[in-house]
Amino acid sequence: MSLVLLLAPLVLSPVEPGAINVDRLLDDWTGQPYVLVDRAVKGADHKGPDDLSGRVRVAYTAEHLFFAVEVKDDHFLDGGYRRGDRLELVFAPAGAYVTRLE
Image 1: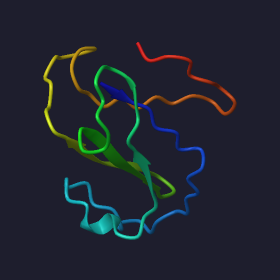
Image 2: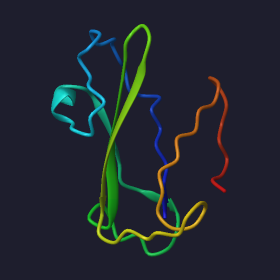
Image 3: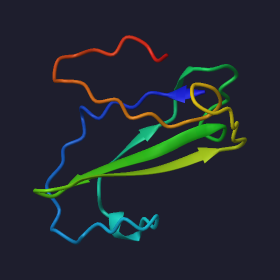
């Protein structure tokens, strides 16, 4: 199953250097805005947020871009590349429109 994330409405301010630690813990992300992702666009039988959902946070400093992703999935499907459950980040220039996930 795939979820689509649109970060366009998310307004960010830079964080101080050292404010975000890359350590798999999200305690230093408290107060950072997030986007709720809870609608599947690819895959079958999505039963709502308890089935598959997530929160994505983005932060930046003058030198780094950080992403923190929390995912709730009632059943992880390990299918490797292009099969099964996965996280994909797609970057596109302003004004571009992604028409499909492959």
